[in-house]
Image 1 (cartoon, rainbow, N blue to C red):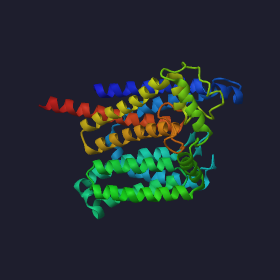
Image 2 (image 1 turned 30 degrees about the vertical axis):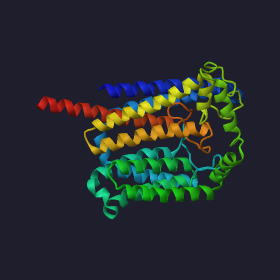
Image 3 (image 1 turned 90 degrees about the vertical axis):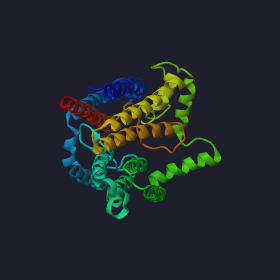
Image 4 (image 1 turned 180 degrees about the vertical axis):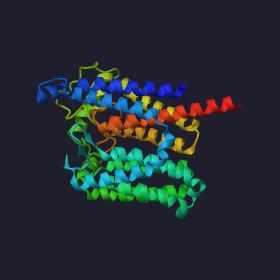
Length: 369
C-alpha cells in the first residue's frame, strides 16, 4: 500500500469518525422527542457506517479492470431503476427520489453518479483522440450524460443533475475534448436545467425564495436562517462538542443536510475551515493517485469520483451559508444518511484499488528490469 493511499484512508476515517460524533450530538433531542431515545438516529447512522466501511473494504479488493466488462450493463440497470423510481416511488417532500428497500431508503441518483463516471471513463479511454470529433466521438458519451441527467432532473433532483453534468464535462475536458464542444454544450445544458428547474414546482419555489433574498434581503428559509445563527454562534473556536443549541429543534433536521452548521457552532470558524480544507486535501490526494494510474480508465475514474466528493461538499457548505438555493446534497461522510455515505465509501474503495494496482504494476516492472 503506497503512502498516498494510506493518507486517503486516514482522511476518510477522520471524516467518518467526526460525522458519527456530529450525528450523535445533532440528533439527540429529536431522537428523544420522537423515539424516546437519545441514540435512535445515531444507532441507525452507525449501522450505515458499518455497511459503508464494509463496502469500502470490498471494493478496495476488487481489481478495477474488472469493471470494464460491466459498466454498460450497470448503466442500463441504473437507468431502469431511475425510470421505475420516477413512476412508482412515493413522493417525499415533493420529490420522487427514494426506493424503500426495507432496511434502507435507497437513492438511485447517487448510484447513477458513480456508474456514469465509470462508464464515461471507459468510453473516453476507448475513443482516445476521436473525442475531439463531435460526431464520431464527443456525441456518444454526451448521450449517456443527457439520459441520466434528465432522469435525475425530473425526479426532481436539480442539484444532483447539476453535479452529474459538471462532473461529466470535467471528464470530457480532461480526456481531450475540444473546449468549444465542452463549453458550448455545457452552456446549452445549463439553460435547459435552469428552465426545467423553474418549470418544476418543487425547485421553482426554492429558486424564487433564493432570488428574493438576494434582491430584497432577508433569509432564504427557516433552515438557512437557523443555520446562519448556528454558524455565527460558533465564533472562532466554537462552543464545544455536544453543546449545540440550534440542534435542540431550532434547526429542523440538523443532523442531515445542514449538519455543517452544527459543526460550525460546536467547532467554530476554525473547525469549519479545517473540514473544508480536509475535503480539498482529499481531492488533491485523488489527483495524485489518478496521475500515477497505469491507464486512462483508472485516471479518469479516480478524477471523477474524487471530484464528485469535493463538489458535493462545497455545494453543501454553500447552501448552509446561504450562497446557493437549498438543495438535498449531503456533506460527504459526515451527514446522517444511508445511500450517500455508503456510496461515497464505495467510491473511496475503488480509488484505493486503483492506487494499489498502480503500485503493483510498478513493482512488477522493476522486477522485470
